[in-house]
Length: 352
Image 1 (spheres, rainbow, N blue to C red):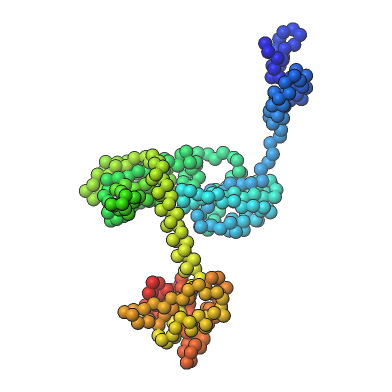
Image 2 (cartoon, rainbow, N blue to C red):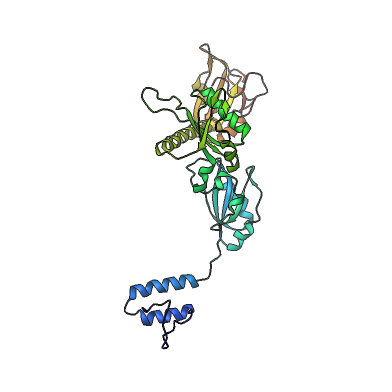
């Protein structure tokens, strides 16, 4: 029998019993001295197996809302101990819910944080120690499902038609019959002749695996006189890239629109002949102005303006100009664009 560190023969020819780590190391250095590389591997393996398990100071959180900032997570878990880091990994599937990691200065703080079972921005979250394996039977949200199992919640559906109304009807049908949808995508054609037209199928991702299973039962049923084909989604590289591109473009548009509206006020009470430059001069002292929109109707000014700023402080300063005098003793009305006015016909979206 060859001489090895794991099994060593005694003088009687019998294989000795299992050695304690220190004994294995001693015999390794004696019998493998002519093979230093192999001896080094054995030492590392023994020391790794014998090393005490280090307590973790990091927790794993699932169910985090997509738009949740790191500051909200840090604030929520600061009561358990000193938070040294908050990580929110990028989510390529663009689910409504995400995961996050919170690192504490002490492992005791991480253990204390396991008691947190409340809500985060009105979303139910689940907390466990980082590295601990979850119970698969308790995974319900798509954000908690490993990528290998996520396909079970995504389906390929065709047969419903190619127009926008048919797609909307399918979306409503699935929501009513099965449950909440995490995403609903109808890929468009990329060919020159029919570019932009729907390709006649949808990729549907459900919020829970059980709802996806119930949707599979709709295979062969009718919707609007059409026979549906419902089956598990098999990823196509080209379709996946296109969906990611569409989702990214849509997200950029939403973020751009949100940024445009977030720091915006509505202004009324000035003369219709008032120019953009005059409004800019009046509100310029509040802070940096991004844009000033003066909506028109039939080519004539409507006497209303939308002033967009670059910060919340500028908005607050502009709101203080409400009921203040402006040109020829006119009194301005100023309110935040995200709020509805009490006056009929002057909602923030008018003219846009």
